[in-house]
Picture 1: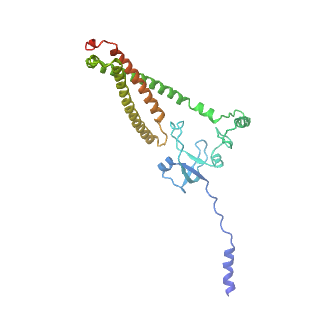
Picture 2 (picture 1 turned 180 degrees about the vertical axis):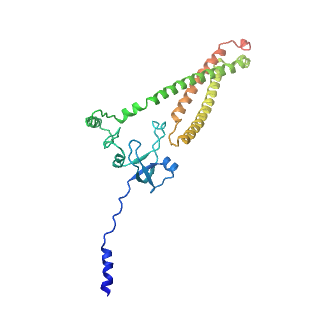
Picture 3 (picture 1 turned 90 degrees about the horizontal axis):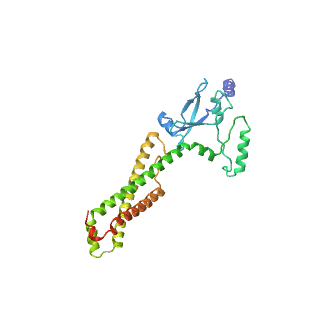
Length: 280
């Protein structure tokens, strides 16, 4: 009797288990897409290619990444996912076809002859294939930014010239308003050199204060611009950049303009006889 009862149990244990379904392929989701769609690690996402009528395939979200701040792609502002190459190719209606791909050499491309030989080998793989180095590609992609940079340089030059003319006008007005006082100092025995240096030092002081105020205003405006556009595009890219080199260059230009304006304004009074300084 015990043997008869145990036989069905042994037979049931010997039956093969049902095969488990293959694991779903994984992908990475950009942070902005994950936040907008409410996706997290372990969620299932269905992906299909826009071209072709292939059905959507399920993928498992294996991680969330932050897209690099690239000014070349900020205008498109596209959301991204990253798949393994075989999974991406399976979504395409035409396999073994790509528009472009990037290859990173083991030595980072530091060996120029080796990199050039590899580029020639890639171009021989298929008709119409063209290989570009990273420096050449960056040079071609930055044409728009070069035009904007030249435009900004022209604006900066006009601004510096306008600031110099404004500073000169201020110093001339201040000197003309004090012609009577300067004449009294000259009559009391103060030399031309002392008057000249006083006017130049005053111009340098005004230029220094103006440079400091301009640097503070520039820092504040740059922060506001970065905060606004970082929120609009949801990126870490810095749209306005104020470096110590720029601040130092602006300060030096301010000092030069201050000295030039002080010298020109001082020359208007130091060669005039003290008896005539009170005349208008």
